[in-house]
Length: 358
Image 1 (cartoon, rainbow, N blue to C red):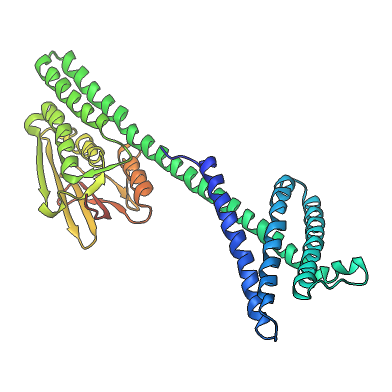
Image 2 (image 1 turned 180 degrees about the vertical axis):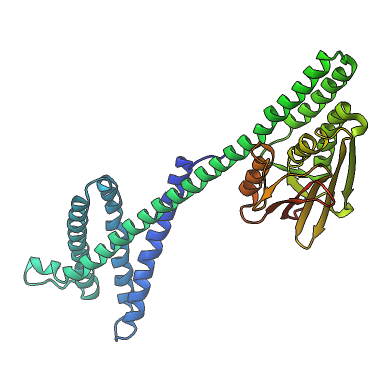
């Protein structure tokens, strides 16, 4: 199951990120001022002034974080007003401390003539605090966008999983209806032994089907075993009228394929090629690797069907439509499903998908 944002963990991460970025920013501020001081002939004590000023800035901007949190949901105009006023008063306070540090420490107790001179050069401090505020809001909005993006991606993943489950489970009632209908027919004509054999094989096939996670892929070897369970049921119905030919390359046995991807193709062939001919027919399942792709072909020698623009005219049923949609959901544009005439008669379905090993 896909979980959405863990808010407790998110808040802890954001809190750590704030203190890290906050401290690194003010340390950078101090370092830049230190480099600037090297251009002037200043005493070593000025380095202390620089770091005291940076520490004061670090200390005075912390309350702004909590003020801005309170104002976060205000209308934009009120937010702008809060930011400007908070930045200005913080800038004034910071400038007073900077002037005190400079005059009391660097100038050894110098006192200005008027008290309001402690606030001189406030505009520069205001711009710096305003920049800090802008960075705070910018980073917060960026984090919100990232969270929204993650939630959209996870919501899409949930929808994608739901789609795959729906497509996969859609096969069970479709196949079950056809099989139970055949069993019912056998019972009506009093072929009870044959009907009992079908019920047994059907239970084995459904047990396998329900045990497999519809969101996970299986090895081709496992998929072939599932297909053989299904075909064993059909063999009971058609006996010698159904001929099977498996041509599976050894290097493809461990390739990953969507579970139950072959069964609807085989069912389609049986319904439209084997069942409609008195003498029955054959189905050939071929699998081989070509470069980075796995190629699967399911072919029959039935009477064929009309193929219009690469689509089977009889494709109004579940089988091929379902298979194409599942492949689209799993591989996007990295697959193809082509229906064409088989030679000399019949229909063949070719599937190409990425070759992936378990």
